[in-house]
Image 1 (cartoon, helix red, strand yellow):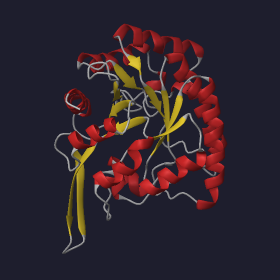
Image 2 (image 1 turned 60 degrees about the vertical axis):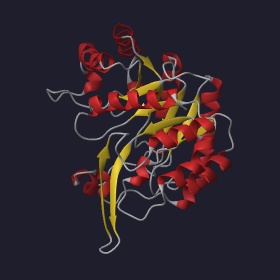
Image 3 (image 1 turned 135 degrees about the vertical axis):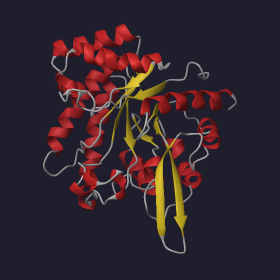
Length: 303
């Protein structure tokens, strides 16, 4: 079993798709990547998750990808996993294109020594979501149940590719998709039935919603046995039964409504050995992420 110091805890690289000067990060000089990742390394991270909303690695040509690898070497960082956001493989208009993007990402992940490619069925933000303070406060995409067989078929195709490259897929839980509840997620994983596929038990995506929700502990207990990678985050959540109103906002792992000391210990007891990815919205996401990484290691030491 990994010890607390060895356990891979990745930083979600959340600088966004544009530089301070407004140019696309993907086409910016490599020194921009180096300056950004140096901040990550300076806070003690050894691993990153270069999610595609920062630099879409699948779309870099060979020369730019070589530059990216050199930046990793220069900053002494490794890639634990690569997450793909809002590129659903059953998107009616772009599903086939997204499928090919994830195939290329699998190859890039293997070349970088990552162990996981993370994907989900969330789709592009709606205009209402883009205009909200927090995008989860507005209604988003709902998966079409008739596309579920196609989703399973395409996940199996990707899983076969991942298995050949020696890595795994992790399917991210997200509201109103085929992985939108613990029951849906477990049923989907069991229907896929592939040894290279696990769950990303991102219960934080559900706890933040302004709708009735089971307790986080109840939800985690159902999905942790299937987990192989973990976007871990916490929220303040309040409910007023008299008015039916809800409130939620991002919080550090230690202070939100989810008791992660209990949940992480539960996960380890149930056999979780995957990487964590610290994910924080708002404020100094990097500074809070580093504090969250320290907290995770503290909990693992006593687990």
